[in-house]
Length: 173
Image (tube, rainbow, N blue to C red; front, side):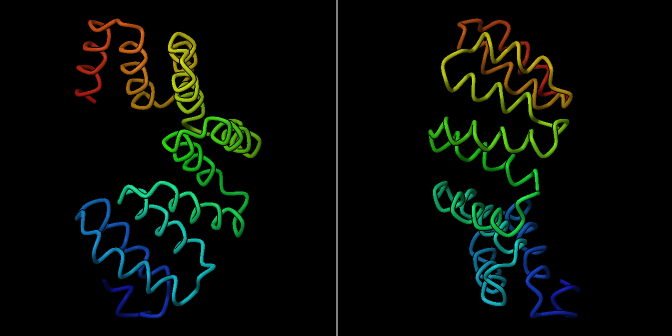
């Protein structure tokens, strides 16, 4: 709130608050107000576009979230986290081909990006190959990503005991 007091016309002051409102307070109404203000001050501000995308995602409007994120990418095409998010969003929208394209771009920009193997596994799982997803996610460095996908892959393979054990392990992290 201090940032808003010091710079009420700065989009980033509003987007910092938006992240708190969405991620911790689940206050989408106030978040929407601050997203609109941030975009009103600068409709091409990457931070404002990211916040608009996050709010649309949290509100369940995946297609709008993708649109905001694509606009952010147009203004900041080297940000690998944009492609990370775009891969997830495209998967959730059922666009496996577009998810693969976003993942390739992410890897091109940063071959060691955390989450790469998890996202690759998510794509393989969505494409109906849980065994390949399980193999791919075993390469993931971020344990929580790996555990999450392993549980889903085991379920898809009909291995409920392994899935339950993985979920129990996930719960301890």
